[in-house]
Length: 202
Image 1 (cartoon, rainbow, N blue to C red):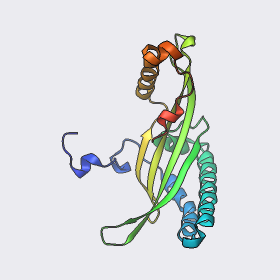
Image 2 (cartoon, one colour):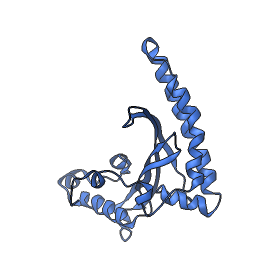
Image 3 (cartoon, rainbow, N blue to C red):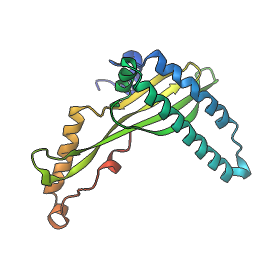
Image 4 (cartoon, helix red, strand yellow):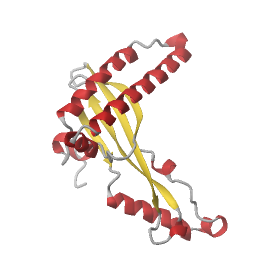
């Protein structure tokens, strides 16, 4: 970064991105408004245990609903495939609606700005070294975190880690290969388990 201005520090909005969501994708956010209403009226206080259980089931239902709608949308044609690319996903592979939660932000005029925060996750298993089968395999993850405005039903930010990114893949392979030269690998061998836990902080 050349400066620490607001424009340099914030994530790019779709208007400043090379990829943009379709109108159909953004209009699909309306289906999540009903969950937002249930979230707002979840009781708190002495009934906290039941409130947390209710929120758990609410978020799980929302993730299930979102996953089903996105799966149909991705398979609907070119527009759906372009939206999958915008979200950092490969439409041919399974994906997970990993997180879905609401946030009530304070707007500049003192009002309430309801937002939804979504996390979409996808992974595939690849060889650490395609030329050396004994090097083992790793789990390569991709997807995106989406912050959307529930009033206007538009995507404010989409932070992608594209599953088809060759640069990311090469970096992760290089990281995995370093284990073979580490002191730990000398005594205990290289870690061959999936690396998913190291890369879930999207």
